[in-house]
Amino acid sequence: MSNITEHFEKILDNTHRANPDAERMWDQRAAQFSFSQREDVSGFSESTTELLTANGYLPGNSVLDIGGGAGRYALPFAKVADFVTVSDISAKMLEHARQNAEAAALGNLDYLKLDWNKAVIEGSDLAKAHDIAFASMVPSVRSRSGILKMIAAARKGCVINQLIKSSDNVMDRLKSAAGIASRYDMHNDRGTVQATFHILWELSYNVQISYHQYKNKSELSEDEAVARYGGRFGMHKYLEDDREMNLAGMIGGMAVDKMIAVEEENVLATIIWDV
Image (tube, rainbow, N blue to C red; front, side):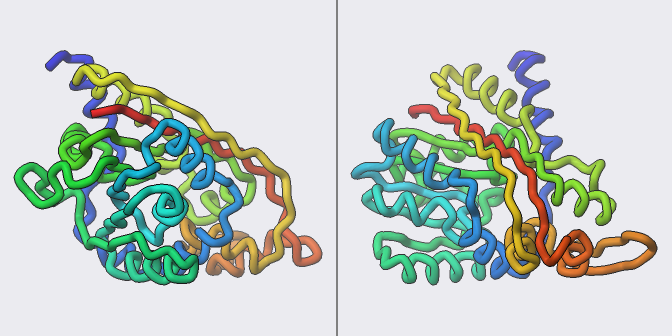
């Protein structure tokens, strides 16, 4: 292994740490994530579905959605693919995914409680069990071993979605008031895409990267803003003007005539490779 490859592996390893409390954390956030998913206006799940339909990854194929949560991508995939397995560490996330699929009258999904960090793919029932392995914004695939597990699970190809830019005036103020503005932000991470590409290149895979952009100015009601930002920021406490408050209190403080002006730009990278 070259020193350059080791350098890029360290970049991935430094983006996350195994959280022994991850299951409980995601269980607690499941309802808000599902709600925020229904309110999402970025169109990224739709544009990713269109991309993977056009390149032949979805039609007639089975998909393993790793860290699939409440089904943000699994549901639109299921409208095109033959079958989708939603996997997640959180049983409550999977229950929301099931409810969302039922509400959409989609019956070609299965649900698997799975911790990708601990999963052993080679020699298991998951080895080459699906045509496509997919992961979007999943920390446990941000390592050489996590990537190799995806390859071991897929018969035809793999896909990783990673946000490389997330700019939002409301989000910036929330981060500042929560005291997390200087922390690593997985939603603004170009390095992960670069490192993933290099590792796959060194493994002799031909890698394609596509980009999706969402840029918008809008106004949200207070309730809409709480729904929009609750998935990422609902668990924090906020301090402004020596007052501690929850997310709803922060949103209320930003409102003018009960409306919040939002300026945002998000860029998503989709990394694709055949196996």
